[in-house]
Amino acid sequence: MIKEINVDQLMAKITEKEKFHLIDVREQDEWNESHIEGASLIPKSTLPAGLNQFPSDLDATIILQCRSGKRSLDVGLMLLNEGYTDLYNLEGGILAWKEKGYPITQG
Image 1: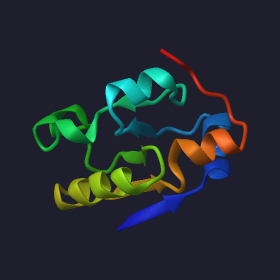
Image 2: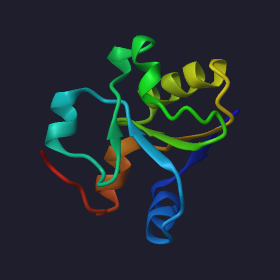
Image 3: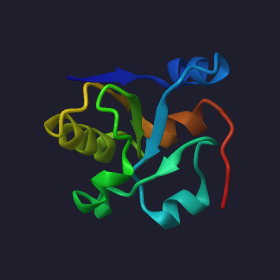
């Protein structure tokens, strides 16, 4: 099952230095405009071939993020089918993150 996480919950995890993988599934040009510090870029367009870029531990906590939450949910379903068990989708994506005024990185 893919759980939902909101931006406040994600910020709390970052602040508390919890162990998780934040994966941005947008495209490179979107990433260059803005991304959440600490995230890794694995564009949805590179999947399923790019699945080897995800953590090899199927029990790893993975938080997926895109622009608004649709693409990351699609990737989550793909990962679920690959056997990953601790998956979260960021509600509202980076749009919600920015709207809340949380910091973003460019480049």
